Structures are given as C-alpha cells and as structure tokens.
Image 1 (spheres, one colour):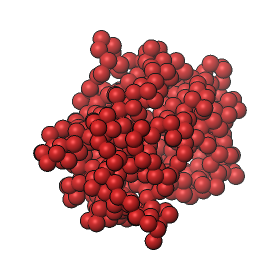
Image 2 (cartoon, one colour; image 1 turned 90 degrees about the horizontal axis):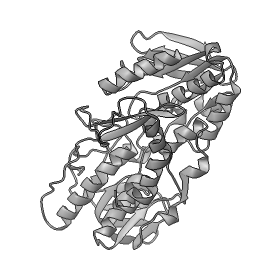
Image 3 (cartoon, rainbow, N blue to C red; image 1 turned 180 degrees about the horizontal axis):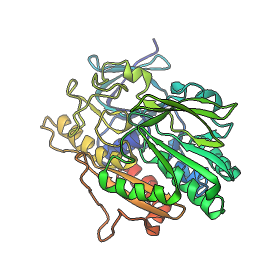
Length: 400
C-alpha cells in the first residue's frame, strides 16, 4: 500500500460537479480541499450535440483540467477504486489511501458500450456514432452529411442518462439538415424512446411531439435497440410493451449507450439499493447521505429523481456547499434543492426551446418575459454561445 494522505474536504471527481463545489468552498475560505481526478482534459459535454450536428467545433468543448483547478485546491491526479465511508477513506488506482473529514462524492457515471450486443464493435464505423463521446461526436456529423436517402435511427436506452433530451436533439438537427438539402422526403427517420412519452415533462412533450411530426419522424415509444450488427447495418428493435422484436436496416444511426454508476460505485457501500443502476443514496433535498453524515453527493452519480444535466448541478452545488459549511460549523443543514433541471432542446439548426422544471415537473422558468416553451432563435444563440460562457467563466469559478 502506498503512503496515505489526509484532507479536510476530499472532492471525488473533477468534472462539472466537483470543480463547481471545490471553487465554492475556496470562495468560502475553506482550506485543505483536494480534488481527486485522473483526467488532464475537462470537457463541456452539453455542446457535443452541436458538434455532432455540425454547428460547433470539438475544440470549443475542451479545456486543460489544470486551468480549472481552483487556486489553493490540491489536485490529486489519480482515480478512485473504492470508498470506505465508515473509515472515511478512499483507495486510488495507485493504491494510495486518502482519508478525509468530509467527502463530496461526484465521480460521474459510466457509458456502457457493451450494454447492447454488437455496439462496442461497431461504434464509430458502419454509420454508427454517438454524441456521448468526444471521440465519436465529430463522426456523427460526417455520417449525417454522408446520407442522402435511406433509414436513420436515433436510440435512447432505458434508465437515467446524461441529458435525457440529447438523443432526440440530434434527430432534429439531422432532419433539419436533410430538409435543407432537399432530401428529407427520401429519409425514414426513427426515434426510439423507452418511455410512453417523448419527454418526461408533459407541457414540453406536447411541443416536441409537434416538432417531431413536422419532420416526419417516426417516434416509437416504449421501444429500445437491443442488438446491432454493424457489418450488415441492421438494428434489432424491441417493443417493450408487447415484447416483439424487429430487425431494421439502417444507413446511419446515432446511439445513446446504456449508462450507470461506475462499477466500483455500484458495488460499494454508498450505492442506493433502490437504484438498479448503482447510483449513490442521498437525500434528494439536502444532498447529504442518510447513512454517513459527513458524505454529500451530487451530479450524475447521485440517485436523484431529476434529469442528469449541468443545469441541475448548477443548482445542486450551492446546496451541497451551504449544507457542508453548516455541518462543519456544527449546525443543522437548512439548504434544500428542489430538483430543478434544465434541458436546452435544440429543435432545428437555429432554434431551441428551454425546458426547466423541478421534482414535481412544475415549470421553473429562469428567463423573464420570454416563452421558452416555444422554439426561438435567440435561445439557440444562448445554447451555442451564452451557456458555454456561463459554464467556463462563472459556474466553474463558483460564481453561478
């Protein structure tokens, strides 16, 4: 076992959630904060939809992790492999033991490319791509441009995923491109959604149904892709309601891979037994572990009944920090997260609507005097330019 080290606050994960919390802690003058993160690259993943749609360069989504670590925060360039919340320790890939007084748990989730038979072997080729990876998002655009007729399939897996609207956003971007090129009538566009509704919030679902119909998209509800043969370009689609399976030939396909908590999280003591995907047990309002009072969790790894988005993290981070500061001061936690999440739904190459709602699916608009339930060009510019500025310069600096 390598030498151990101790930190007052250990932030596990240097993604959106981890950096946002670390920055807020430093702004609150908390000392001895460490971030455990192995990657030297930080990605702004919400923009990958526009990369796959040919509307943004991949370079706009990348920063060096070192440039985002807050001043005064220790960066431990290693990965976690286990956590022992009783002993208050984390073991790393280099066999180092890290101990802590308080743990902020934000390791993100994992993409399970092997979760669909045949997918791992064909992703990135044979017309199959995914905007859920920096490696494959640019390939999505190449495949969209290369198709002038035939069948295009856009998949969504069952279970919680990052940005639940992303699988259909790229379908709209592709359909709008094909319409501009005058070839949409020669395309069969299939959108697979595992739920009964195209979108979880009913008011925005009505608008998205209209938009999908305007492109002639075939929305297949309660359906999933359960296998793919890349060489023959055939996808097996299962109707989950009837159990019937159908093999459909495709010319291009955008795949959203099944997702879950990292394996070591799912098999560890912080996993919520109620989550079949291994996400972390946490109070949905205080974001504090009900079993280990010095542990807080947020972001994609937390088992919260809301969409896993960066906008959700922007509201979760202040709650975690406020409650952590209260615990450190020996006080009761009082800050509550209401489940706010936001999904900027790109519906065309220059149009977007903004879905914002809470745990109860009640709309929570943040922009006054604007109807964000309707497609707007100014909302597209917010997505392409405004939100990245908010992210890089304010959210990750603990200012928003």
